[in-house]
Length: 95
Image 1: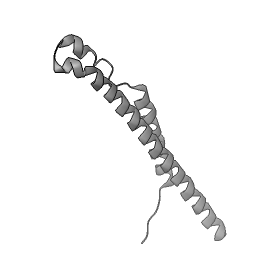
Image 2: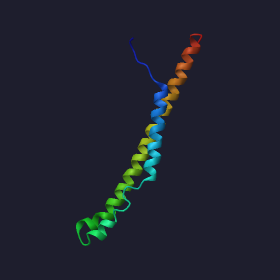
Image 3: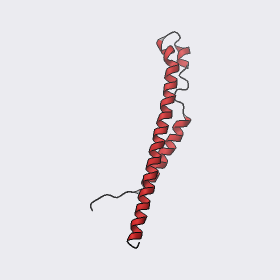
Image 4: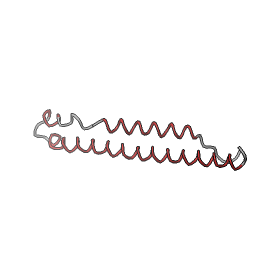
């Protein structure tokens, strides 16, 4: 067999899993608790940087969630396109 075959169901499953991962990432704030560094190590560079580290972790998690959500939407759209083209081809050949 030459060419390629697309497993539309697998595309849909991957998109759904990615959407779930994005939802979970939005619910987690990985920077939570890092402000305790300032209390644990008062006066040091770590204490000064703790708030920035906490907000950076939270921002990056939010950014990642948005990116994986976009990927999920793209894969969902691709699966829809593949499915529509496959259905169209079937109709064209009397299927």
